[in-house]
Amino acid sequence: MEISDWKKLPFGYKKTNYNVRCYYRNGEWGALELSSSEYVPIHIAATSLHYGQEAFEGMKAYMGKDGKIRVFRWQDNAARLKSSAEGIRMAVVPESLFRDAVFTAIRMNREFIPPHGSGASLYIRPLLIGTGPEVGVKPSGEYLFMVFVTPVGPYFKEGMKPVEMMICRDCDRAAPLGTGNIKVGGNYAASLRAIEAAHQAGYSNVVFLDAREKKYIDECGPANFFGIRENTYITPDSPSILPSITNKSLIRIAEDMGLKTERRKVPVEELELFEEAGACGTAAVISPIKKIADPVMNREYVIGDGNPGKITLRLYEKLTGIQTGDEPDPYGWIEFVE
Ligand code: PLP
Ligand code: COI
Image 1: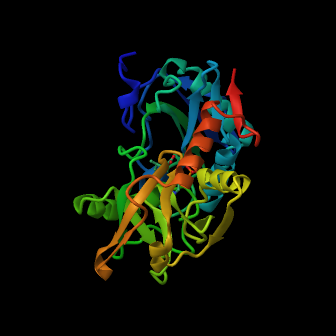
Image 2: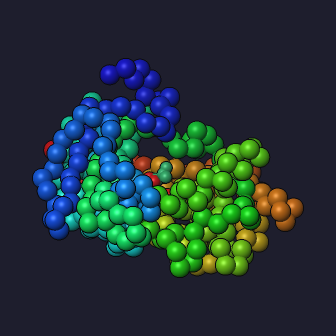
């Protein structure tokens, strides 16, 4: 294993030993297969290649101080993959198959799990693709479910250093009645132009607004938005955002810390009232936000004093503490990999 400095690991792809695969043919799932190839032979007319029949998940496994491997809330990822599959009419991966595939992929790549305390973790990427040939626009009759893993560091290279983001007003990631609430590849393709514009303007990522009125905050790149004001954790309610498992966990933790929580529309102008703000997700964990620019409206919202906010830090410590085993898990969110 040539990873010499786990602490410097970027959020990127590194080859591991194995991935797992399972084919759906003739109306049923086959046996789980182990593969050491990084490639997938695929029919030239597969529906995933032409019509975007593809969904994925993102989850992490953590090495505890006790040497035990922990997986966080995998049942929620299994349920979300189910709703993604139903949303674009793919075969549903049963929960037991999802668990088997994820846990096998972790077990077969133990040496790639970053050590406790490195700040890195093993990113797990389940994906489901339509493999059957179709030329008309219709669902495939055949699917391939795969899981690969790769060791990763923080998604936002700034880590816990607050970032600046840019509101995009000439690009929508997802429509209110579209596919924003499920995790399908097309949403990410649709976000690339805005992410590139934000990067070119010197920002870490993009803040998407609701597509219909362009009045409310939707999401921050590959993460949900939250803001803190008057001891309240506030996060957008919108039909076009991905229901984040991290966000759901933070809401629970915030409630148990004595904060009020609100899931509701968040008008852009409310940004000036937030004492703290952040982007949250499996890859992002929590990335504090210190500024959101709205160049088209010629406005800039500065949040906090440039340091991560106190409540943001407490939420971060509690969440990552549970994930790595440094804190007890009163919610039953962790399952150990034997
Ligand atoms: N929003 C988008 C668009 C994402 O891609 C992700 C990542 O999965 C999230 C939010 C955060 O979701 P979760 O916390 O379940 O990883
Ligand atoms: C995750 O947080 O797991 C994601 O899927 C984000 C990813 C698109 C980088």
